[in-house]
Length: 65
Image (cartoon, rainbow, N blue to C red; front, side, top):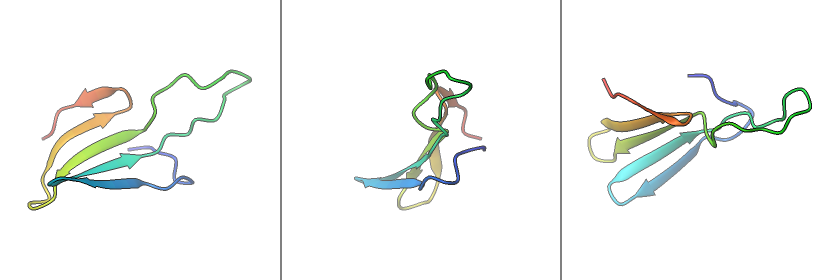
């Protein structure tokens, strides 16, 4: 997964799940304003088992394998 390593990864605990958000580079490209997703990827992890039960990449949902 490619993400902006110059920005911090955000980890939130909500009830019994962690939500981990990987940042995306939002800098303007060639004089245009950024029009992409708010994050590179977002994962939902069960706080007790560590199982990833949902993930989003950019602006679309990815299957969990």
